[in-house]
Image 1 (cartoon, rainbow, N blue to C red):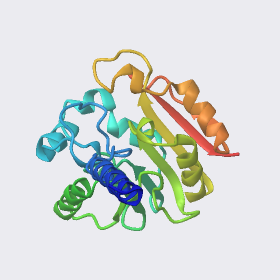
Image 2: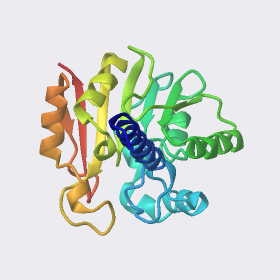
Image 3: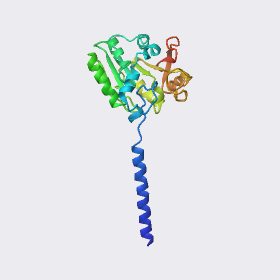
Length: 239
């Protein structure tokens, strides 16, 4: 066999190896950085959400969650006014989005961002059932919420920041979506064992969130330690 033939065979083998590696990589599921899965860790499908979507949504909307998440108290603490524009990052099936839409009223708007199309489909079903017409579902990217610039009075992130591939860069993008008096509110689990929530090693401490926000050009404006037992509640504004 000639040297030229050997080189050709070697090239073909290398090509086959590269193609096989690319195929394996393309079949790996993308982790969901937005959908609120902090109380569920089972078999996951596309974007890291559970393959059993019905069970997942039922889990997120289980009335028992209200006891520790206190959604109505959280919304009240945001002091959102009628006519305001609010963004819910990691909106899921609308646990907070639907409540916020009621508060801002017909003249207000809620941008509900998620990266999982199936979850947004479920949100749209719930919007139709509710009769609300002031919620705008947005299929975001893992590294970009795709929000319009300068429009948000409040950006709410609940149980989601630890999913972002680059939290600092993502917070910068959220900062650009704020209007002049806008706020970013981050609620997530303390970095210690709690009866629910993600593994402790997957969590981000409140101190680290503050440091990330500062790197993103934000500053801590308020923290509410008395409201939630298992989670911190931090408010940030542009520096």
